[in-house]
Image 1 (cartoon, helix red, strand yellow):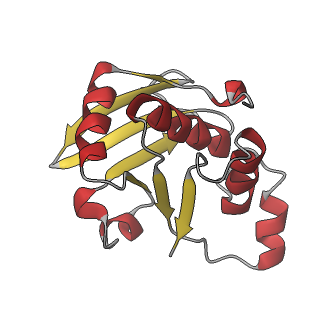
Image 2: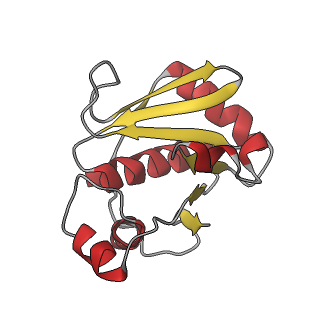
Length: 151
């Protein structure tokens, strides 16, 4: 079995409880927080919102996932310099903790294709193609690989 070691995250007790609760209503959905776009998503009612900050001022340390309920929203908070790698780490941690392969839903950025391609080399920006490439490299088995959906 290939190692997903570069993409490891530790879950707080609150994050574990939120994941356990969300995993009961399969499939396990996480919605990448992206301002107002996340609020209009059709699965948000049963999904956990994932907030990944590049360089947090008061967020969790890199590699650590906090769980919290804020204004009725169930949130997982993570941080990292490489945002796609931090997202991958949360997805693998959720899978390993619950035994359910998670699905991530995020908004596709309104950028020119060349700008999106250039974003592949920038670890500070969230790039869906880069995230998918990281997930494929870390987990070659499609049945165990977290899925990424865009809208």
